[in-house]
Length: 133
Image (cartoon, rainbow, N blue to C red; front, side):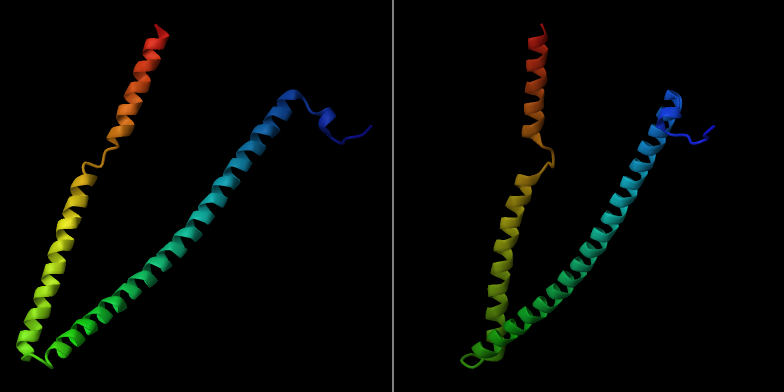
């Protein structure tokens, strides 16, 4: 008499039980894999954001040095205080234009509701209701 339990010897209930266990284990393994992958990607994204932030700081300081260079260059033909005022005025004009453009863009982006998608969904629902009648 053999005591091996092969597929032919298992009942349907045992096979269904094995299947549910295997599907459950597969789902857990897939979730664990996805979790590890997302953690890895998040770590890389965080590192990238930190490096980009450091680059932004250096770019800011580089811009400040360029502004100082412009003031010093203009100070060769004007008094230093006048050169500094002219450069500051130019920077304020650029900042004002940037604020106006940003304000326009922000107005176009608010409220953050996908109005066109909602309207399209309402039309689809209405069409389904009419087709059902």
